Length: 384
Image (cartoon, rainbow, N blue to C red):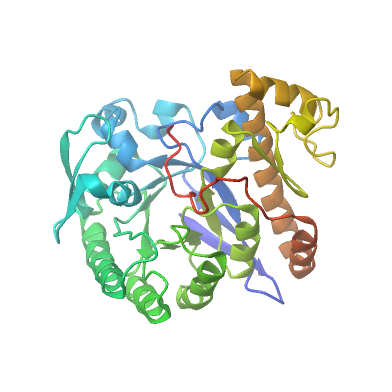
C-alpha cells in the first residue's frame, strides 16, 4: 500500500489523498461500506461498483465462524470468494468479541469466547487475528485491540489501552504477508491524556496506517470530536488515518475536518432496511403515513437510480408490505448518498472550499433520529 497526500484544506485539518493497493486505488476521504459476512446486505458487487464503492470491509469474527477462514483461503481468498476485484479491509474481530461481554473472558494472552451462533468455545489472540486475516487476504488488515463500551471506569480504559499496545506489538511480530498493510489502533476512551499516550505509543511501533478505535460506543458526539482533536495530531501525516465504525453524515464531515481519511459503518445498509433514508436535508422515514401519497422522489436533488425512477409513495408501499425490493432500493439510495457526500467533500477540499461546504452542510442537514433508535450503534455487525 502507498499513500499520497494530494492537498490539504487551508482552514481545517481536512486533506485529500490517494491510497494505492494491489487491487486498485482509493480516493480519500473515503467511506467504506461494510460487508460483514462477505456481502453488503442486499447489494451485488456490481451494484457496489456502480454506486461508487472503491473499497469494502469484511469482518474477521464472522468470517472465522462462518464459513471459516481456511475454507476461504482454499477457495482463493476473500476477493475471489466474494467476486470483488477492488480493495478490501478486514477488521480484527476485536469489537465483535468484546461486544459479547457475557460470552468472553479476557487475559493477557487473548480472549476466550463462545460463539453467539452455537455456544462453541474459541480463543482469539493477536497472533490468531493476524493469521485469520492473512488467510482471508484483504489489502488492509487491522491489529487486534481491546475495546471498552463507554462510559467506563478510568482504570478499565487505561488497562484496555495498555493491552491494545501490547497486542499491537504482537500483531506486528506475527505478520508474515508483506502484500498486506497492517494498521494499528488507538484506544483511550474519553480521557485526553490516555488518547495522546496511546496514539504516541502505537505510532512508535510503526504501522502502515493508523486507526482511532473505541468511539461511537455510547459517548456524546462532542466527546467523540474532542477525542479526535487530541488524537489525530499525534498520528503521522504521511499515513492514512481511519476512524472506525463511525458513519453518520455529520460525523463524516466533522471527522474529515479533523484530518480523518477513512470511515466505515453499517448505517447506510442497516437503516435502509429499517426505512431510514438519508437526504441532503436530513432523514426521510419512509414508513410514515405521510408518504403514502407522496409522488416526490426520496430527495429531489438526488440523481441515484432510485430517485430518478421511484416515488416515496411506492417505497412506502414496499416497506409496509415487507417486500424485499424495498430494502434493496432503500439501501441503494443510501449507499449512493454516502458516496456522493464523500465525492463532494473531496471536491471541496481540492477546490479550497471545504470550510464553506462544512458550513452549508450544517445549515441544511437536519440531524435527528427516529423515536426509540439507539444513539450509537455504528459498530454493530450488519448481519441481522
